Length: 328
Length: 298
Image 1 (cartoon, chains in turn cyan, yellow):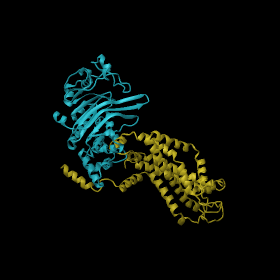
Image 2: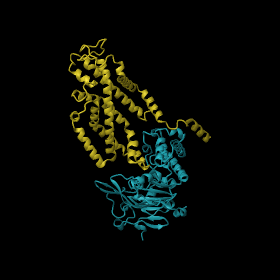
Image 3: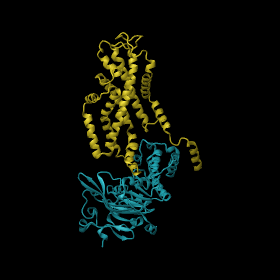
Image 4: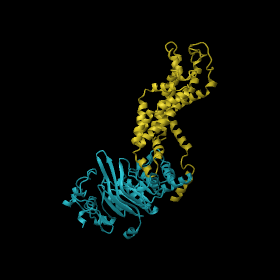
C-alpha cells in the first residue's frame, strides 16, 4: 500500500500556507506555514485539538476565508494549478465541481426552506448542463447511493424532516453530485451519535472506492481517522508537527504531542489507571509561545525549545517530524 | 426484493417526483385553508377586490349623482349622502378602487427598494453597508409627511400615481433596516457557507438562498404597511396633492371629518372600509406566513 501511495501523483499540494486573521487585538496566525500533500485516491487525516487551525486549512483550500481573515502567503496546487492564482469566478467552478466540502453541522448545512432534493438539484445544475428530468433522476440516484431509503419520496422532504445522520448523508450526496476529485470533510461525524458516526464512515469508505476521489478528513478523533485515512498530519497551534502514514503514526509516533494525543485515547485492550491528559491549553494563536509552540506543555522540553523553532524534517520514509529531539 | 420495491416506488412516484410550482402553490393554499383567521382575511380582501372591480356595475348610483345633501342612512341611500348630496355607498365602493390600488402599489415599490438595499447592505457589509445605511438613516430621520409634501410639490403632475411613486420612494428605510439585520445574521449560517462551498456566487446566495428564508418577515412588514399607505394617500390628497375629484377612502374620511359630530355616517363608513381592509391584510399576512413556513405541518 505504502509503495503505491508514494508513487502516486499529488492531487493537492499545499506549500507554506499562511492564513491570518487580522482582529483588533492583533494578528491571529491560524495557519502558519503549513504544507500538506494529498495524493490521488488517498485519504489524508488532519488531526489536532480545537482551535489549532485545521478547519482554516480546509477553508483556505476553497478560498472561503472571510474577513477579517486572509490567506497571506503560500501555494495551493490542485491538479497542477495554483488555486491562489485563480480568480473568484474560476474558484466557483472548482468549488463543488472539483473540490467538495462537507461540514460538521449536518442539520444546519441544509437550507431550511428548500426540499433536500431541490438543493442537490441546484448543486448539480451549477456545474453541469443537464435537462430538468435528468437532474431529478440524478438526484434520486445519488440519494440512493448514500443510503437514503425510498429516495424518490424523501427527496421532496424538507431538512427538518431528516435526522442528523440523514442530513449528513444528504450533504455527502450533494458534495458527490458533481463527481469532485477531492472531498474535504470537516469533522463530518462530530455532532452525530456513535452508531450513526460509524454508518457515515462506512459510507465514506464505500464512496471513496466508487467515486475514486481523494479525501481530506479533518478531525480530532484518532479513532475516526483510523477508519478511513492512509496518512495523518498532526497540527498544533497552526503548524504541522508530524506527518506520516497511518501505521507509523500509531506504532512509531515521534513528536511528543502526537504521542501525548495517542495516549489520551481510551483503549479497551490496555489497562490503565487513568487516562492521560495533556497539561495546559492550546496556546492563543495571537501570542504563540516562542520557539517550538508545544514546549510549555511538553515533558521533554529543553532550553533550546523555547528559542528555536524546529523545522519539519524527514526522519523516515514519508515520516516528517518537527521536534529538536530528532533534529541532527 | 430490494429492486422490486425500488421499481414499485419508481412507478408510483414517477409523476410526482418534484412538486411543480403549481403543486407547491396548492400545498400552500391547503395549509392556508386550515386557518380560519387567514380565510377570513382572504374573504375580506376578496370581497373588497370584487367591489373595487365591479363598482361601476353594482353601485346604486353614479358617483357624480347628487341628491339632497347630508341625508342619514335610509333605504334609498344605504350609507346616507355626503355634504354635496352624493351617495356614500357609491363613493365607498368607488373608493375601494383607488385605495386598494394605492396601498398595494406603494407597498410593492417600497418592497423592491427596501429589500434590494437591505439585502445588498447586509450581505456585502463593509463600506457598501456603511454608505447604504447612512443614506437610509438620512431618509428615515426626515419627517415622512414633510418629505412627502416637499416631493409632491416639486412635481407638476397631480394624481394617485404620483402619490404612489413618492410614497414608495420615501418609505422604504424601515424595511431596508429590518432586511439588512436579517441578512447580517443569515449570511453567517452554515447553509450559506455550504452553498458557497458548492460554488454558488454571491448574488445567487443573496437572492436564492437567503431571501426565501426571510419571507415571513417581509410579509408581515408589507401587510402592516398597506393601511399606512392608504392613510398617507388620504392625507396627501387632503392637503391638495392628489386628484380631489377621485374619491378614495382617505378623501372621504377627511371630508367627513369636518361633519363628524353632526353627521356620523360620513366618517363611519369610509373608516370601516379602511379598518376591514387592514384587518384583511393583517389576517391574510399572518396566515400566509404560517402557510409558507415549511416547518408548520399541514
